[in-house]
Length: 292
Image 1 (spheres, helix red, strand yellow):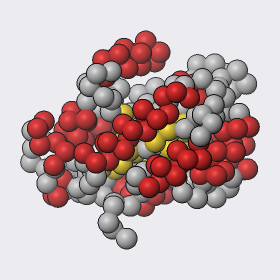
Image 2 (tube, rainbow, N blue to C red):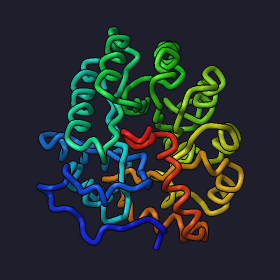
Image 3 (cartoon, rainbow, N blue to C red):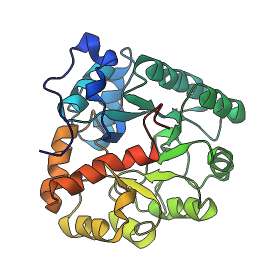
């Protein structure tokens, strides 16, 4: 058992947003998703169709909190991404609403889109609402990670927000909207920006991640990687990347956080203390609210 207090039971669905303080610890899952009940089933169908992965969860907030509580995780970062400029406001309204529902447990990230003209005002609105991060998913949002306008927005936002950037997919780097090379270019242009390169630096792009961002001061998360990456590459990433820059992410509802913790430990042979360190790394990047 990992050395953090585990609750005896998950909260009932109706009590999920009012979880007792004992459920909040330093462990954080930095990569999850929760959707409005009206669209959750549609989004899950889209995810399954694209990634060919059958989701393990419903996508609903109360089920996310129950799954994380059962895994012994106190807080979770919840992401959404505007698939068009017109969706920026609705997606960010959802993030702001999530923060109001469960401020002690949920760390919702907002979203941006290079095609959205009023991005400066929207960054200000998110900051006033207490949002501390932005999700960027070029592959789903319909732009390239090397879009010059995206860099303009990220430069303006870098001191105020953490960036979670989706990286990688089935196409090779030059053809894919996102890739480790494009992420490296952003890191070199904005070296002080706090960037999380999702999926161990690039979903299905791990060998290129090793050539580019692994070993640098770029955060990576474990989401949607541990079940698919080959053993030698996985070990190379963990051997070469600064351990404090490796964060735990489950990608719920695609994967269960408890199962992902077990997979992380078993595939790398990590002792409990090292697993606990990875689970807590995200809290240094995003401290619990009211802790400073």
